[in-house]
Length: 492
Image (cartoon, rainbow, N blue to C red; front, side):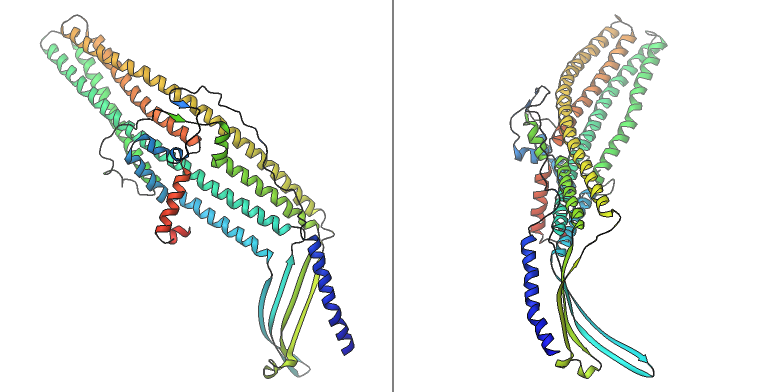
């Protein structure tokens, strides 16, 4: 008996050495496709004509990172900084990044051995005889990743973490643009209220003039009633503008993660619509595809899915596991820690799923089909990015042309109102022509205000589709967290 144990004891190290030799020879094998970034060509230049301040120069990283500072509005800059710090969508995106980071760490644990401690007391009875068994020990196991299934899972988790990071950047790009768009809208409503108020004052003076002429018998009632409904029609626009003004302020507050109404006092001071910079560099299409977070996210999702094919393919191959245990076992508690109670075991094992009715192959097909979906999603993201930039370039340039024409129309309408008023008071024209001139002035002034807002909004949308705003936001957040000593919010 002892000779047999000694024989097996001598053979055991040889078997373990042979086993690890196999591991070393096959350890570099990683099944499944290796990921390669798809070669998707982009045009060398933009199709749209670059004009009205748009140039094809290389984008300056600092200016694009904090593009809102080019609008020269400190109130807007302050609102955006606060939104980045307090917006709930940003916090959700950061939580998703934390979850993805934890999943990556979880997938890496499969690459290491496991160790479990156990202890038990068992009591049994047979034929009036009672027995007790005391045991304690450690169990260790390690599944060797010979064919790279675990490594592919880690690779997929790493790419998924990177995709969640790009999703956070995309949220920041959308948030900064959304705050700016709502701020421009707010200032536009302020300007429209001011314009409408000025026109109402002018029309009230005209109303008083026609009333005086009517009462003096110099004009008929028709002119008096026309002046009256023109004045009241203008007055009726004010409540809707005030309502829209309140909505825009409430929307900005919610974007900052605050309750509606909290910004009302802060935004009481009137200011003009932000002024656009004289020049904006947009670079070339390839620059946009490299920096747009949504395109980068789609590419990382494709990489993650490609790795999942390898993880599924690894199930076709055998699994090798090295297991061992060591402990103490005795029928009495007093003898448990004696030398005779010691036991141990160690040895490799292999398992291989040789029949599963095609389940593994079907799973590989599923993962491959999903990869095709992610590839098409990546291509679609590229095309969508190019389309959005082309449209934004045209909209920004053409709205400036429209604003210039409207500005000329407003100047002409103001002069027409002055002349019409003089001629009406002199009796050279009837009131209808003065009424028409006043209506035209109000219409053109409102259109000009809206066009000013549209030019600024289209510039903001252009910055958004260029992928601007996320670098500075993330850097400032990280610096703030470092200064705060990485508190609970920083951990998120």
